[in-house]
Amino acid sequence: MKYYELLFILPGTLGEDEVVPIVKSVKDIVEKATGKDAKMQDLGKSRIAYPMNHIRYGYFQLCQFESEPENILDINNKLRLMSDLLRVNINKRDTAGGIVEKVSAISDVTVRDNKFPSRSTAEEKRPEVKRSEHIEAGHQIDKKQAKSKVKTESKVKTETKAENIKMEDIDKKLDELLETNIADV
Image 1 (tube, rainbow, N blue to C red):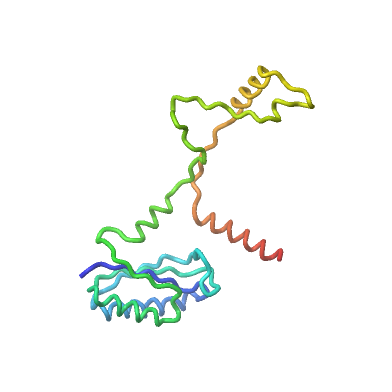
Image 2: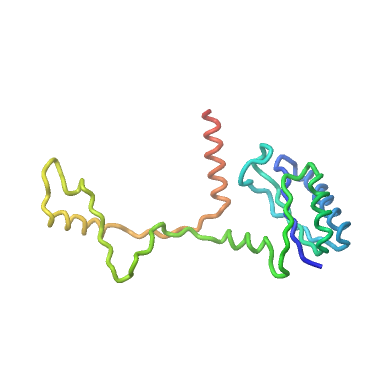
């Protein structure tokens, strides 16, 4: 016996009450093939990475079960015959942890500063001087004035802290942008 995870996506166009019987039928298929109790987890409704059959949102469901490897092909074939499922994916898993733990680890990622680390920490970065700063109104400024101007500008810069950004906030903002673009067309 090996451990498996079945991840399937239902169309977001279904109502919440229509999802429950489909999930139950998937669970019945898995339990009939394996003879063991399957654990179902609702991962919620979320935006799909790319539209499938012109559907942008889906209900993500996760089923964890234990089965013989010979039964997996039978389960997969029966699930692919169900027209209500957008995607079906069966993977082997180790006994400790599965997709849910991986997803929660990914969602805890914070935004970092976009600056690249310097080649050596001992080197001091020289501030960039733009050509337009050297030339004002057709006259060239001497190098001492330009260096002092750059030094004062580098002191004025303030540090910004990276904020934690939640995926829900990003999804909401993307939806707002997409809706405004569609409304303009």
